[in-house]
Length: 161
Image 1 (spheres, helix red, strand yellow):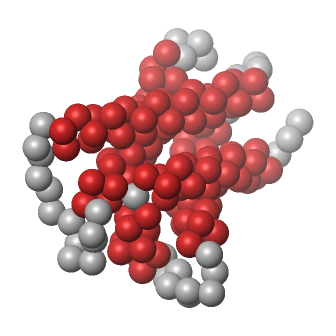
Image 2 (cartoon, helix red, strand yellow; image 1 turned 90 degrees about the vertical axis):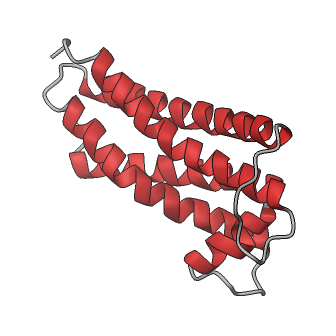
């Protein structure tokens, strides 16, 4: 049996990898979301490191930070279950699928909102407000989707204890 701390570490690593891949996609959509917001926020202003690598680093750090509480909740939900290991990995798959699905939904809804003329404020350093906003909606959608995925998984499995 794998100790809970090792399981939690594995879930955090999984979330960090998702974050790095997610941020590669969102960097391609809105690089200024990173250069004007995320790089300063994470203290990654070093111009010697390629922006894509810094975007991956932002994703790793943010994914790990989100993966810790989400993983802890999944561990708590799995505790005492007969097939806890399978339950845990199934739950992590649902959380990741929720994050990806709602991130893409956020991207799509953002695109529609911009097509309909929605105007939102962006930082002064932003030249491409469309790309910035699409990346921002995608990021917000990913966090929301992870929470929705976790809630749906917990609700769906509430009676199986």
